[in-house]
Image (cartoon, rainbow, N blue to C red; front, side):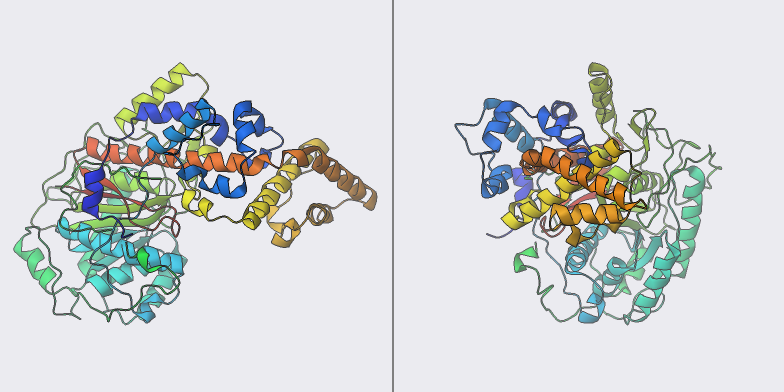
Amino acid sequence: MAAPTYHDLLEKTREQPMFQDLLRFLYEFAWIHNFVTTRFFVDEVWRHMPQEWRDVLLALTAEELNHLPFEFHQERAHFPPSLKRFLQMSHKLSLIRDQVNILGKKAVDPNLKRGMSPKKLHEVTNMSAVVMETASKAGCDVIVDIGSGLGYLGQVLHKCYGYSVVGVEGCDGHVERAEKRGAKQDLQDGCIHNVTFNLQQTGEHLNVFHDKVSKALRSLKPCVHSQTAVQNPCQVDSKLKSERDTRCQAGVSPQDENPNLDNKYSGMEVCQRIYRGRNICLCNDVSDNTARTVVNASGMCPGGNESTQTSPNLPKNDIRQEYPGGEAETSHVPVAALSSEERRVCMIGLHCCGDLTPTMLWYFLHMSSVRALCLVSCCYHKMSFDEDTSQFNSFPLSENCREAYADMKRQHPGWSLHPVSLRLAAQETRSRWKAQTETDHDTHVRHVAYRGILEAFFMEAEVGQLDRKVIRKADFSSFDAFSTSIVTGLDVSNEVRAEYLRHLQELHTRHVQHFCYVEVMTCLQVLVQPVLETLLQLDRHTYLTDHGVAAQLVPIFQENVSPRNIALIANKQ
C-alpha cells in the first residue's frame, strides 16, 4: 500500500487530544511509566497492575503481545473493561506516526553518503527534502542548522538542493571534522560555514548568536555549480531573487537511496499544500517557565543556571525582534516585519536533544529574519529538571498545557511528571515492538531481570554501585555468567565473593517467578510511550500557535527506522 500523502493526512485530521485528557491518562496509569527499570524487583512494579489485567495478559503468547498495541479496533471478549478502555485511550491520545509521502526527494551520490549509517541516510534524505519545501514556502535563501554535527544534513542541502548553509555546533571537534568532511565532498568553497556555539536562553546569548550567524552569512557565497535556480513561490525582494537565481541545485543521477532499506521508505508529500492546513496538528496512528535553560548545540545538555541578564537596546532593522530583557518567556511575541536588508533564514535541527528544542523555539520567536523552522526532537528526559520543585524548566511551554498541568497537580498533590517518564517518551515505538522475536523477548527479559536483581543486591548487601559499563553482552547469557562477572569486579576476599554469589543466587530464586511480568509491563509501556510523546509535541506546537505562528506536526521518517520521526514545522506567514 502506498504511503499516505500530505493531503491525505489533512483529510484524515481528527481533533487534537486535549491536554486535560492526556494528563489524566498519564496520572491514572503512572504505575506503568513512572518507575526506574532497574528497580523492577525492588519496587515490585507488577503489584500495581490490576489482578484482572494480570490474568489475561500473562496468558498471551509472545506473538499476541507483539500485536496487542495494534488491536485498538479489535474486541477481545475476555478482556476486562478497564483494560479495553486503556487500549482505546492509548490510541485515541496518540499522534499519527505513519510517514507521509515526501515528494521532491533527491538521491544522494555515493561520495556524499560516505560515513552515513542506513538510519542516518534515511533521515538526511527525507529531512533535506522537507527542509527544501519548508524554506521555499517561506522564501528563505539560507539554512541555519543547529546541532549540525559532522555536517551531513547541511552538505546534502547544499549539494542537492542549492542552499547556502550555516552549521551551528557546540563541539569544536565536530566542527573541525565537519570542515574536513566538507573538503572531501567536492562542495563549492564558501557555501557552507560552520561555527561553534552553545545556545542558551538569555538575551545576551541571543545577541552573540546573532553576531556569529550574521558574520557567517556575510561570508557565504552563492552556489554556482548549477544553472537551475531553486524555485520559490514566495514573493521576496529583488536582492533575494538575484541570490536565489545564482544558487545551485546540483542534480545527481537517480539511484537507490539505500539498498538496506525498503523502497517504501521514500515516503511524505511536502507539496504545494504544505501550509494550507495552517495551525492544524496532524493526528494519526501510533509551571511557570521563567527559568533559564542552557543547551549544547551538539545535543549535549550541560547543567547550570545562568545569572540574570539584561538585553541591550536593539538597533532598528536588527534581525531580532524586540523582547523583554532577561525573560526566557514572553506573553506574546509579535512576528516582526522583515527588513529588505535581511536574509531570510530557515532554522533546522535534526535530533534536538533535551532543552535544545525549547531554546530553538525561543530563538525562532525572537529573530525576525528566521522565517521558518523544521526540527526533530529527541531525548526529552534530558530537559533540565529541578528536583526540589519537581518541575522541568522547559515544560510546559504553552499556556493551555501549563494550566492543565497545574490543575492536575492541584487535584493530585505530590504528582508530577519526572525524567523517568520522559525517558520512555524518547524510547522505541510500537513498530519495532511488533517485530520482536521470541529470542528478542527472551534476551530483553534477561537484561531487565538480571539488572533488577543486581539493584536489589546492591541495596540488601550495601555494596557500592559498580560501573555498569563493565557488564558485557556475553555476561547476560545466563545468570551464573552474569553474577560471576559482577563479583569478579569487586575488590573483596574470596570468602566475601562467595557470599555475594550466594546472595545473588538467592535473589534470583526469589524473583525468577516474576520474570514473566517483564514483557507484559514492557508491552504496556509501548502503549503509553506515544501518549507521553504526544503531550510534549502538542505543547511545543501550541506554544508556537499561541504566538501567531503557523505550525504543524508531521511524521517525516519511517517509524521503524527512526522512532523519533515527528517534525515540528513552522512558518511565520
